Image (tube, rainbow, N blue to C red; front, side, top):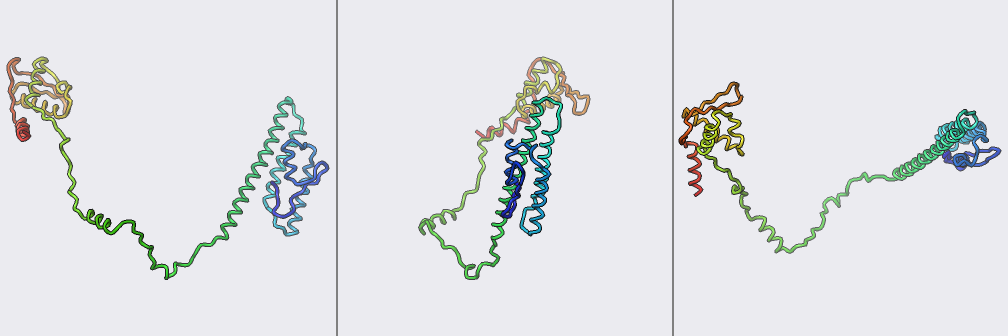
Length: 276
């Protein structure tokens, strides 16, 4: 704890104890000495005299001793006051308070010891680093033109084969389209489905007519079928608001076949013929 950098640490001279101040604190923390029997005023006077003597002798001593001593002395004073002042609480509570004060002193002792050890480690590291000096001169000219020796692990024939393989032109990359398949949707077939549903219900919405469509192509084909049926005057289209619900009413016959233009299916027929 309170140790000096010089050869003579701070010594305490009391009637019940004589020795280093750190040893006194350890005995108090371990409850081997009663703090009420220690004259804190005398210890303070001796510490002040110790500092003045070190200043007069111009010794190299630790300035942090003063702050450490003040804090530890204040803790000892609190501990002694808790033992001497009367307390109206029960005996168990009083003992608990004394134990807490003693534990606080012991914790502060451990804390200061840890700080001291860390400070000593930093001081040693700084002293070691202070003796290390980097190389400030440039590389000598006689070494700048030197190149490392080439170590060959392959034969000239193997190297020639690698070079020839690297010079072979690579084929351009291609992207296969065989995995792509767009199923063809017939407008005439979807028109038959729309006609059957409108004949059964009379009136429907476009949303209901495409409710079972599993792809976008089916929805588009049924919409084109509606346009073809509307052009043939077989149904009417009503829409109250822009982008609103589209209502479809069947006005054609309830029986017989309905033929729609096959202009939308001509491209599909040509594609099927090409595939064949």
